[in-house]
Image 1 (tube, rainbow, N blue to C red):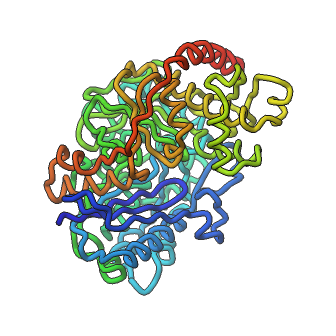
Image 2 (image 1 turned 30 degrees about the horizontal axis):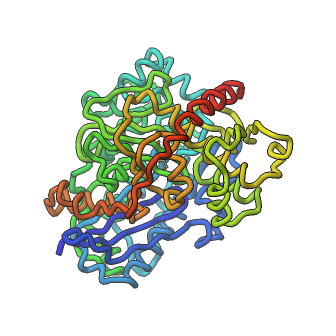
Length: 517
Ligand code: XUL
């Protein structure tokens, strides 16, 4: 028996899977949605709504409540004492600011009190900016200018200066609250923050997630002195060291042993949710393309050498199995689908049957489905743009509106990912919305390749459990993939008649998109 625990601290929930990696059997699986479980934090989707000037922050204490609750539930489902190694992942780019008390608070966690109660004392900043934040346009321009332009930022870090990436967020904090920055002794990513808590000691940042900060140099996998200097003063001492994702960073802290029955087993470095999902989807080696439909929709694939996006929307991150991955992120993912469903007065079953009863191409009716300023491509919309009949444009045709939303999202993913020059083969689909047959069919039709889905929708936590087994228990990735990539029965094939429909529709969609500021 090689039982491991994989964790996923994502935008809207904290999830975990206890897995027998020798047989592929799921022993326990739980997800704690932050918003509905802890309404007192006033964060229905896991972050604080209504931030000014594009600010989107979350309360790190809410994440800790989620982690405690997740462990409580997993311990009710199984004996956590059987777990032999742990790893996990967090939503990317978000940053947590800790004060001088952080190391001693971490080392002295008492099981009779909650994590949130005890960690409150270690925060230098009450809230954490997350990946949805777009408040840092000025800081991006400043960082780029200081190092000689966005070409330099991109060549060094794998991405041009990006609003949601950690460098611009740190710079804005230093500018707006210099005293708060001065109090900060450590800045963690969501992944390394959770790893620190689990191990009861300050954790490093892995190359996978570290690449999403605009601070790590891809050529030598180290903090880049020029980027650090362009971001904020004395930043090097505030950042944890960078390590390969396979590093064992410590053992499970006494807090989790005494409270939830875990043993003193190795903790493997945490990584970003997308790099973890790459492993969980058995796509860690080049050749497989993944589309993840979650709070954000993402398109990613492994690659051996970094290859950057000429338009500046795509990114290069570290692949937890070595080498690199390329990723394109779309902000208007599940929250946009949910908003269309709500405005159309439909249940999720109704949403599904709307897709089933409308044809590919939607008789030419189109939607640019952006309810929040989009990042791929950068568009400052908060209201979707519709093109079609008068009743469609006044939200009177629910089935056509649902199809227009899904087709708009998938065509945008297709158009924005063409620079990667990957294609053919097949697409692996994951994330909550991958359960929808109609959405999966639309992906197959737009990309004109077969689509496969995983039985487990939580590929991020699964990737954590697989990485724990690979790095701490020396199980081979090939064998783990064979046992664990439970591809759900039934490949979804593209309909050839849809090819010509989407070829034309995509030209119209791009034209509509170009007309939007
Ligand atoms: C990736 C990104 C999101 C977050 C949240 O660049 O910003 O996918 O990782 O899932």
